[in-house]
Amino acid sequence: MRVLVVGAGAVGGYFGGRLLEKGEDVTFLVRERRKKQLEERGLVIQSVHGDAQLTPKTLIAGERAGRFDLVILSNKAYHLQEAIRDVKPYVEEGTIILPLLNGMAHMELLWREFGKENVLGGLCFIETTLDEEGSIIQTSPVHDVKFGEWSGAVTERVQRLEQLFSNCNARFHLSERIVTDMWHKYLFIAAMSGVTTLFRAPIGLVLSGEYGQEIVLSLLKEIGGIMRAHGAPIAEDIEERQWAQMREMSPETKSSMLRDMEKGQMVEADHLQGHLLEIAKYHQIDAPLLKAVYHHLELYEQQKG
Image (cartoon, one colour):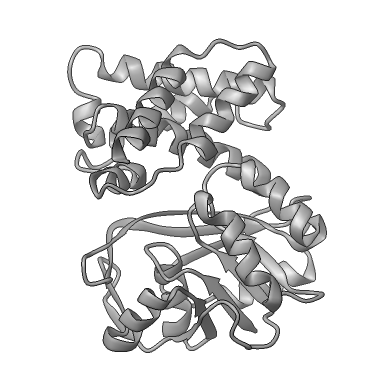
């Protein structure tokens, strides 16, 4: 299969790089600056699961490359419109779209642009960042992707993807409940990014002190209540499970949103916390902690200039 990965950053560069390392036909759709960086240094992965230095094929939007069988969207949500525009010339009938974005708001847009029948559900769990030279630094045991049909069916095409991803130095899981998986990830990332950015601290410090755990659990329950009102198929005890999961994480763990904030970069506040507040408003649910998180992120964006 011909695979096009949109972006060669912390997420796309890592998972696309692992596929390339395995020997699959992978091309990265990148900007000029990243293309030059990759040509000069290669695609460099420094990981607890093993380092790699690869020579990737790259593509700049507008260049001819023919049809791809699989497009993996690994871009940030605020670049989604641009990514859709850039990737459309490489999508034909039968091309599979696999988004690895956080949240849920992007799905409606992808369905409109590519057709619901062509877009899989997908998500990833990984802690990665790019250093100043463009190397991908991956620091935690988790490097997982989940994918599946929106209906939950095990179709021939997802079985082909399962074969494509097999024996790769990353964990790819075919899920028969991808919608639930995505909502659960959304709950986790909205709360985790929310509290770590609100307090500008890794999760261990956030959970310390007299009120830390109470605040985190309250935010999880607030978000879970919004999701249930919206009809999201989440587990009854998911808030307590995710709260326990956060308490078991390495104390130094930071959300990717906090890492972006520390670099002075844009954040996905509108796509994550903002979208949840839109749902809350529609269902007339008050969400004071989520409002505080979102307001803080709005102020950060304004002051970032």
